[in-house]
Image 1 (spheres, rainbow, N blue to C red):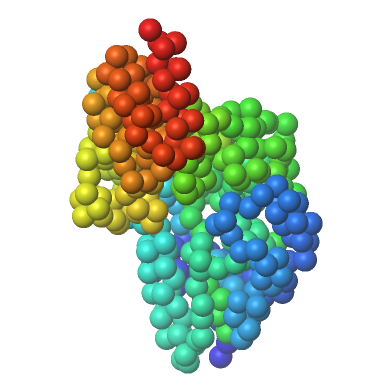
Image 2 (cartoon, rainbow, N blue to C red; image 1 turned 135 degrees about the vertical axis):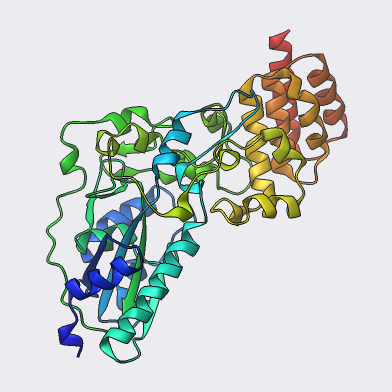
Length: 384
């Protein structure tokens, strides 16, 4: 029965679930990735990926009964989302989020589609199919699996590019114990289709793209907005109004112009998500946060991470009227919030900020925060 099930049959079932970008590869290892992964590790991991290189290159270490890997690419930038990204609100204290957070959390959307596809596959072959699915949840390198499954290629910004939708896609994979003839893909080398273009390298705010396809992920602002603790000083100005993610390397890419938009309703945008009110974020309770952001990909780090980012973003708005909103965070129990509030007050300056910083310095016991307060006071004096 399994021999009769091929890519055409899989594509037909996928279309019934609203998936039009699907491929198949086998479960053989990816030894060619070892030098790349070793080099990446030497630059410092972000903590978001598995440390065991063998687990990253060998699908059978994740599911030992797997025979095939089904891969889908689901576009997320809708026409309305593209318009939203181009139209900033008139308010002076709004933040920015990445396009991929505009709708429902992609982990949920892709997992639901893969499970539904799995049920259709079982009905088609007339037997139970063991499976394990991944939407950023396995140690495997999803971009390389998708590349080998014939869904696209990898650009100089290290993003995966779908042939139809550019880099505005989410990837999901399903390992199954069903033999499906794999795609024989011969993807170009990383960045080859980019030609001589270097716009993403030149536009990256922090220089995180070290060379074509080579990323220092710890410098990527998308990572910085999600990292734990105090954001390093060198990134704070560069964050601007960002509270989650960064799209610069994608928005500057010529391949992302005039790509086919997503028609997945779940990824439709909301202005409140695209441009969150920074002051409102500072006043939110955890319950309010989950009510507003709980269905999005921004929720996993929790309210305090968004508040830390909002404090820095408010400092970057230059709106001195926001000073009273920042001052209470100088007494927060969390070091990263006190540090971020101090920096933002130093950026905005003024007598009220200076007085609050001075009072906080007298009461602060943490050496790291004390240094932040002293630097912020000095910045305030430079404003005067």
